[in-house]
Image: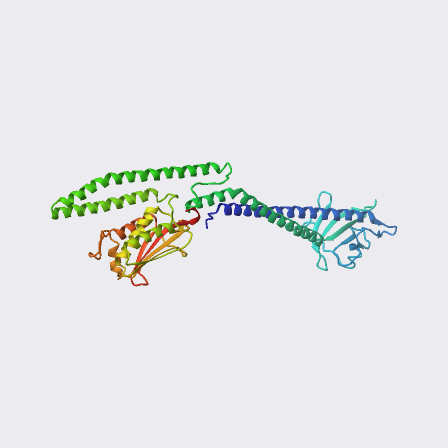
Length: 466
């Protein structure tokens, strides 16, 4: 699975590296300590071996004599694994000397082929004694007098001492490294979070721009991020100038076409009726088409701009007041959630909602209701994941309503289901086009009053900056 968070990537990398490094260091130190402990143990046995050699002689009767005092009580305690043995060699016969800890037991002796002597005529090997102790044995052979009488000397120590020492050291080492590792990871995490905090601030600033809460990338950024912030702000300024230039060009085009179309409409009134009606209808259609495409061009020029936002409450209240004056026989209800703003131009919001209100008032029997609120659930669609706020506007009436097949026909440009009512048939199609340009959508269904329910989903922003 690919990790998309930069912080998570760095933390994961440092955690894996620190863990591997500490494990390798722990194993290496433990191995080195074991080798050192084994060498020290062997040196101790060698020293004890020569202490025994220096303590044993051949007496007047030809017997081995001596009582080695090695300064370790374990050589006097049975079954400890700490023994010393002196045995005569060759034709020389005498009773062997053994430590009190060995008693009548014996120590297994491997052949010279299995454990050869080194250059100092010493050999070291491990065997298991009669009580099950694993012991390390140091052995050598020494000539004791001028007559050539010799003896074999062996001193053993319990290997469990080394294992216990190494185990205790390793346990303490691993605890220390674990504590050091956890502390290092915490310090690294804090350092990484602190180091990447400016990027998090930049991300939050970009989200505020995207949500319409700010017009520039603001913040105290370090030198590494400051050029990026300046470039983003320059891009926003360039976008603002492009939008303003597009609006000016659209306005100029609208004014340049307004007069010729008006002339055509005036001339159509003085022409004979069949020809005049034809010219007038075509001029009105051309006027509607030009206005529609001009609106689409204007919206396309600024729909990606972060500067488009309109406070919903005053705009919708103004529309409802106008509709109440134009339809005194109808009752208009208005419900707006507080702190609501729409991420679109005011004239586009008024045109879309105005068309829906006009259509509803035309077919309503007695009442029309307009409600606006922030969408609480998920909004399906390709553009929904990139935006945090969506606004739902609902226009309902108590008229006859539409069937599903009639709804599909009503959304087509220029289609009028009721020719007895005035209009051009462009209202719903204009609403659909404008809402689509803003990545919103229009849904038609039957409302709770039995009439038509128009649900308009539009991008929203937070009210505190609108």
